View 1 (cartoon, helix red, strand yellow):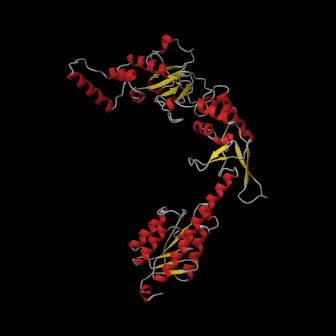
View 2 (cartoon, rainbow, N blue to C red):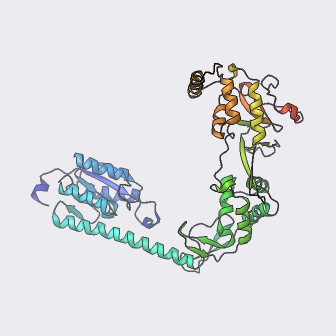
View 3 (cartoon, rainbow, N blue to C red):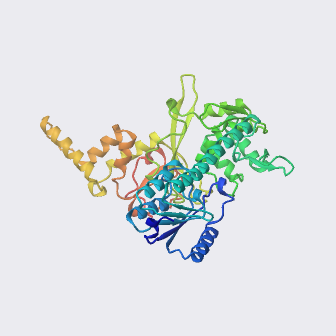
Length: 452
């Protein structure tokens, strides 16, 4: 140790790190690293001011908050030495290595102590430190290439890397080469997958209807939980089920799988065609503006939108319905659907029977009404636009987003019951078991007639 360094009292920070990634599974645990380095510190009478640890990969620059704070504290003078298990605990990339060397060049960091080596602030030992950390980076780079090469080889043999989709499972053979495995059918899940496609192609069901039917028939995730509707639509888009797969995703590299297909390619394409959204919008990207405004008057669940697209000779025709979500296991709810057009017509008629005291207008709508009245006044129109007039105009002529915003100004809660929309005061759930009202009654509000 040089005379210059020996004059400065060394204050060490013990830094321990272990990545959760598979490439560091064989690395000593954090607890073992700390125990071993504390023994060295005690044996050599080193002053360890603080112990810091984290479970992060060191492949990327700046990815470790504890390590970044350690460098900042060294620069501020809190520590001037580091004790750690090995150089690769500090750095596996050029960026973090450069920061360590810069701190040594600026004489903020005087010494790095590892299990078998010590690096002081001198050219030869800094050079050795850089070689060891660069070797760790080289191992990372080569490992990444080898992994990619192995995945590509697996794809060429018909085996998609990673966990196969629902309906399949991995069968490992101890006698085969390490890493080799076979994808086989999960018979219980596979029959439900086939049933899903069958419901669309042969029984003309919607995606949501197929989801509800298979749920009632026992279709669950691998962990036994309920599948969400989005998971069902991902199944409908997965080419793995007819025997082909793309890897990596959106790479354009397609492979023929060696697993047993559950459906034919023709079935897959037919389902995609039937579930295609209106006017070729993004598949599955639909907006239902009234979903969060209504509740089911029968069971109290939310009400969600559902789109049906029927293929016609003149082109696809879109229908939107609203129905009970049956949230919380209320699968027995038999609440009826309501068409979006009928829903809007009912709401327009409902507003005619309201008073301004039934509204709670936000500041943006108030400003809009004031602006419209000023414009009408300048145009010579003396009749003043009331909030109820404005709401009726928006519900009649506005777009879906505007209508949804306006309906949030209604006091009370909108309910769907017996296929009819009602407005109930005080967020009361309507428990009406009477038959569905006739068409003459559908447009009538229940604000004054229906009570909880």
